[in-house]
Image (cartoon, rainbow, N blue to C red; front, side, top):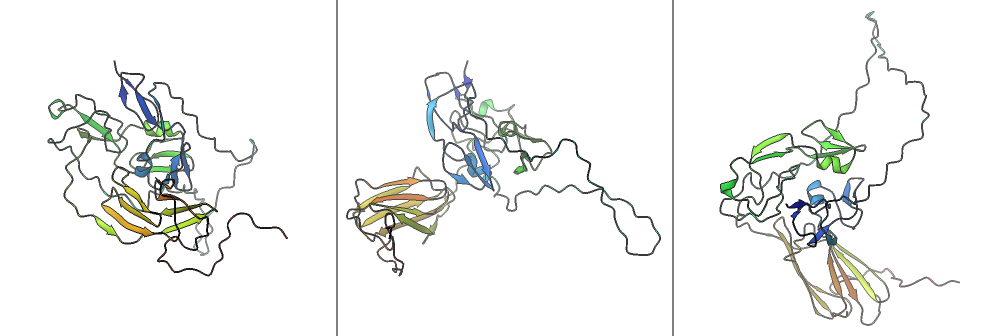
Length: 324
């Protein structure tokens, strides 16, 4: 009988206990609007981007949840026995003679996200598309996973329970804007049953239309350096890791092709200020940027990243400052 892996970021069904599992070994982290995992560095702003963070560890599937719990939120030091706060009393400035009626304090209203995400690309699976095994339903809050035998002819009685609203995290409590239930633990939040019902899950959606990609002419970038290495960052969100290409063409040129999952593309050849070792230089795609590690050939200071950029009058210091 197949089992379901309980590792965070996996959730696949398996029959072979020695099968590789790619997952997050650490607990989720939510801090000041940013979302991520304690075991890796990417931080994102939306919940959908959080669920799309690629797992960072390879191990074996497991039916035992060995993820460490998140750090407890420190409680404010207050005495156990304290007098209740006085109830607010409305004060009238007119002389109508009516009695002042105490008013109950109103609880603050929970506010949803200011900018809702775009609607889902489709509400049903295209019958002409194959549904691979271990594919998770695209609807929020639905934890259904497709099996190897999932097909259009076997999905007549299928029902999808999902959340139509947005995830809501407020003062330690977690829930959805479309229903009232609130919990404290992230695992409990992920198991809140969907409040809406529809026939059939959405595993693959419909065929993508031939949309034109938006060409990005420029992106924000910055860099810092040591005596032998330049660390450059190009800020592009939602980079498609499978199609992105970074080539170190020569000691003074780097070709970059960064397509994104939201139909954008940034392509350029960077003329570097100094020369690099193409064999030792590396690149790394993160949640919101591309990071280049450029190994210098001569150890000289770079006033700019690109040779076609205007130099500043700043003096760049490498290493530790000398003592008088």
